[in-house]
Picture (cartoon, rainbow, N blue to C red):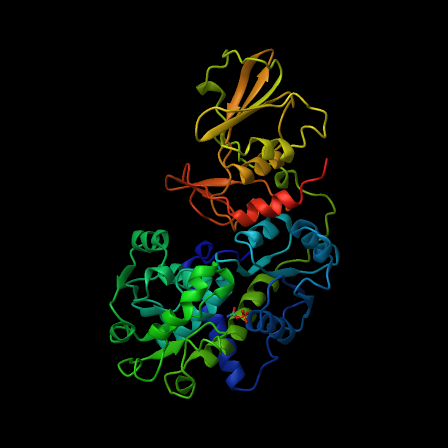
Length: 487
Ligand code: CP
């Protein structure tokens, strides 16, 4: 079993972890820290591509207390990731060295789902980009469960700080939506507010989401106020400049918590420079976040015990699964829905790549290395004021090449020509989200989509796909163009 998204965990599983964490918590109070052991000593790989204090160290404490071992890295400078080793190969190596489970954090959305697709051992998401942090959600739930006398129903919670970029609030709000009578209050500006898609999703799950005019107003209605830090590392320049003024308004101070009949939680770290929580609050009886952090050890111990105690050791398989090689990003490939007999000028066998953004056709030709491969019949032409197309005698195009094309000009139409006729035509799907792991062409991950109640969503970052809504960032383009071979 992998722990990738809180959405995958049932209400029953969450309550089982809370109950087990509670037993571990009580044993700790009785000073019986090492009384719970897995049947066999287990090895946990801690792969932190991004910095972490709590998640990393509490997993290490948890596996040690269960009688196991841990190895891994924190930052990639001393690993072969700095020599451009992929996530896939890094994961395979930790399997080859007989680790029983992997906990991983990475800056790209969906990266840990990809690691889980590669690995045969359980993979736990320690935070993937802006996407999810399910074990943080579990420890937050356990903290609320304790506060709420052993129940997760009827929780009234306030969310504050950076609700736009913070993965912990996304996971926590989705998790609470599995329980009865959840009400979420928030009050931040829309730049830092709850994403619209998330509000809709929570409402569709029966959760009430209420926006109040001020933090003080929110405090009157909740027993838990969950503050978060501004996620500066995930913001663009202009927003970063506005953050000090925004935080001034939302900072938690003694005055704002006067009407709170409950506790302030925070996943931590607090940014000591911006100080989204005033120092006085740290010393208040309403401060609940240090205890919340300790709960992280109880919950992660409960989780590792549940995942590892009964499962047998997994033998290493050095072969890669065929499934890792193929995606469904030709999902819209539809041979029945186009004029296959259409005759194409100036080309007998090859490809027509159409609906490119104006001026991008030569970048695409470079990306496909057409000249380099000797496919020199590149006829580029700007067909309208906005779009361009490219004809080439390259016989076919791979999934990886499709992603390269989409990175330069999203949503091209690709026609395959044989004997002067279109024999196949498709519009490739590439995830909309620029931070999705599938958008990193060097990781070579086949894009996969699933149908979530009528909307097509990315298997990895879960973002819904919206036709013709791609935005390719300048960074993406420049990064790609810089790596083009010189010829
Ligand atoms: N709460 C949390 O994820 O903290 P770290 O970033 O220190 O792991």
